[in-house]
Length: 289
Ligand SMILES: C[S@@+](CC[C@H](N)C(=O)[O-])C[C@H]1O[C@@H](n2cnc3c(N)ncnc32)[C@H](O)[C@@H]1O
Image 1 (tube, rainbow, N blue to C red):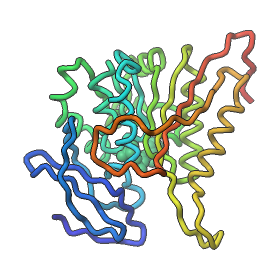
Image 2: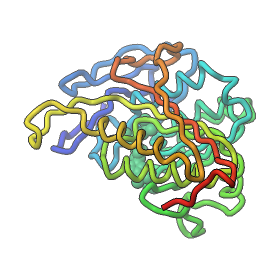
Image 3: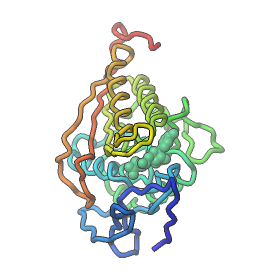
């Protein structure tokens, strides 16, 4: 097993997957960050290259429980996604996109950082035996929530082609985001991106956001709080209040008691949220301020 060095900013996802040709074991870090192992016996066996522990800027190289929760939801509701065009934001290793592509027609699997996107692409290639027979496709592309426009610069790895942008805007009916709300500035960027995308769609879209409500002790408050979660809920209600402009947003929390296809701990802090965006008829829409 790789030697792990724990730095002050090392973060651990608690979930680890097997590699191809390795034994089918899933490694699980306990509460003090020490690896333990247990057998994996899922009905579906995606393989994923991932990292055991990363500095904060590389969190996408680990698989997070929110990715499994969303993957379980997709497999529980296949008819909802059949033949759909789907966009995943902050896809990390690509697990959720790969599972989605076993049902949907096209999945734009997006994140930032060339290194991470390359790892994600390798995982997509590794799992094409699950995706191709189902007629699905995963395209790994760069999409930065802190940028206004999609990158079309052909010299940039994983940039978008013009026809892909048109396809994504014309056809995306589902947006996925797993465990992406852990930093308030990034959460703001994510919600700005969601708002921008949905107000540019001419059709309804359903957004599924999974997250884990994490309690942290902060020196600022001298108490245990879940600041990232609280900020997420504020962003959700702001999005809902932004209705009456080009688009109306309806927010609801879904029960998390659907079937479990993957082995991970479905802790009670794991939540799944659904946001439905519906474009307003032109006469009802107000210009955005
Ligand atoms: C905690 S990881 C979750 C990864 C994956 N969805 C999962 O659940 O395993 C958060 C993801 O958000 C991505 N991310 C962070 N900042 C971003 C930005 N500005 N634009 C797009 N993605 C970003 C990270 O690269 C990372 O992949």
